[in-house]
Length: 408
Image (cartoon, rainbow, N blue to C red; front, side, top):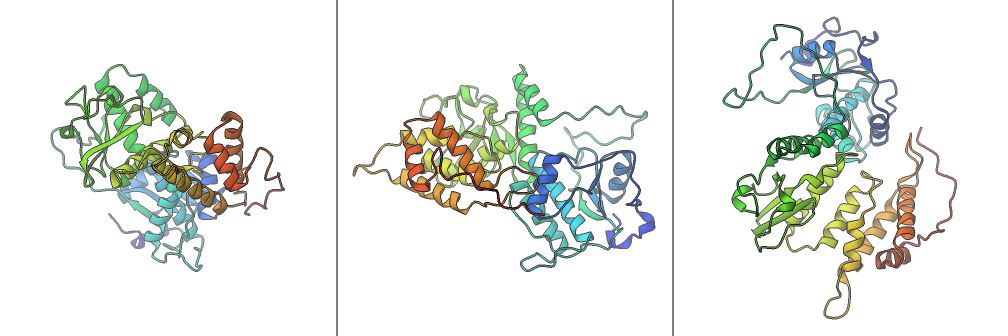
């Protein structure tokens, strides 16, 4: 691969001339990246066409950024998935760097490290400072391809087609999940949902298709130890090691000891709407693996704090249900309820009042709206009573006030 700094502007596409296949970032992706990288990306142009394929193939890169133009290798432009958002965020960091960077206090100054951190931040939904310019304007900043796999049994070598291939339209996440869930052949369904789980989680997680040897119960020999995420298409129909049914769950974690735990996701972890839910369930089970003694209320509290904004729109029924079902200890107290209410109150008070660009509500306002809906549909819930008393949020308070100014 020719390094980026060795190329001249004459060897790269002209950034100012739009190509026939140029598109803009999807609105949701643009708004998300603008929010977390504190930059306007309305001018960014996306290339995922034959020109982009030629450029990225010549540079042996998953993506390359030249000025405000981002070129993606085939199959790499996947907005709405965790790994896709990470790659987009990485390249948008290079856009910022090539426009002059953000030489502010707290920024990561190594350009590639800064871009990688920015990509992870966008995928995880948190702010990031980008740092100094990566390459002079007009020269490509790259996201290298991972090492190619060894060609052996089960791996198809890349060949040159004898005719021009017909490119099928790219199906959305919702379409692919719906099709996989409707598949009647369990072998096909298992492979499809495992691939979708890996796509949603990205390269930071390892997903293994598992549970295929023993059809009716959880067998440790069928699974890999955490932090691997096992996907078992038969999870909900199996029995636990104690003989009880696993039940109608999205995931399950079991194991003989604190250092030997198996994290499993089942078909209910994948649904149309948002691949971010897969990350929520994966991290939920990984919390169980790190602390097997933790009850569901503790783990759902952690999930809420880390995923409420990322998955805004969820009702969080399991959190409320486990709270209301919590039993008192021998002293008649509810220590985990108290810990949950304290954690959620701290989280609420730390949310921003500022309305992000392109959105209607601040993060704090989203919490208030969510909680008011739960006040309406959960009358008599101990969770509602206790959290309202702690936060001061009721059906009418705090009173609606003019929103804080949006970021420019």
